[in-house]
Image (cartoon, rainbow, N blue to C red; front, side, top):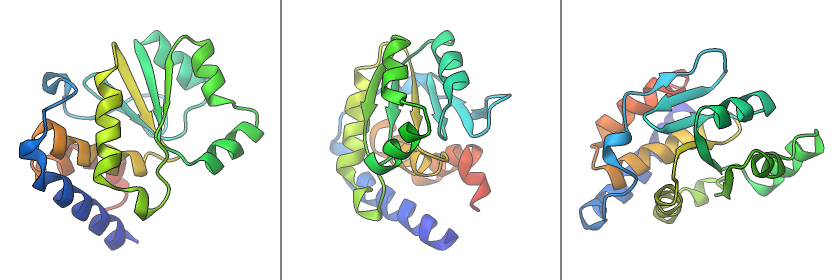
Length: 174
């Protein structure tokens, strides 16, 4: 499993890095710092104005709102979102009630890891007027997507991007 995850990350980054030089840099390069774990929360990491996380709950959402998050990007699949909602947490509704913007970018299979997914993430990040929470169920998929974004839109090398995501959730996978 570790080899498959590593291979998927490498191939996605390789694909997006080939066209990185022709892409406009997006999302405020100076807003990126070394990723650090947010205390008191499992699977929540911050890098500059971005939070990378696993499935948030109401406590995390309220904390995010009070800490300047204005955009929440959910990369879970529709099926996963329905399962969470059936357990009593209607995420999109909660986010809107808290006054934040909700964006769904479903990624659930190797086929949905694509340069187009990275482009959609970059477009969503362009519209953010505050801090951003990007999450999936366990902070695994979102770190893969974040790594590709760093390569394609922030001009990082694959090694630099890998160092940043290893500081996040991926340290558990290597």
